[in-house]
Image (spheres, rainbow, N blue to C red):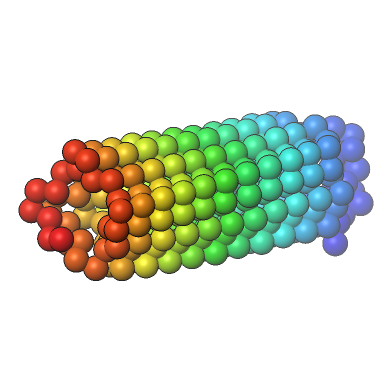
Length: 242
């Protein structure tokens, strides 16, 4: 339960809120840029439209928090707990989510341009129509994630777990998917121009109608892959098994 003392600090404009208990608090549309909330408890808090640019939320408990329409650019969310949080239409460009738990977050049409999600857990998250251009997702758990129509151009997904992920119509131009696990992933109609898939697990992956122009597939085992009506113009298939 929210601490009256900690809430007063927020209302008084204090920037040092390390370890504060603001669980369930209504902080909608407040200006908290550059605030230090490391290790704070904001579980279930309303952060609708809040300004948290450059804020420190390292290790904070933000489970089930509502960030809808929030402005959280360049924030530190390393090791944060964000299970079930609502990110819809929020802006997290440049923010650092390394090793954070974002399981089941709703991030439809969310902006995560150049965000750092290395080794983060996004299992079951809804990132449909989200913008992850230039995002860093190396080693991230994206199993069963919905990335339909998302923008992932030049994103780094090396070694990421995308088992069962929905990437229908996704934009992945120039993305790095080397050594990623795409078992049973769905990429129907996706744009994978110049994508690097070397070393990836493509067991039962669906590339129907996908654009794989100039894709790097050398040495890959594609025998269980659905490539029906896919565009493989200029793709590197040297040594591949089809």
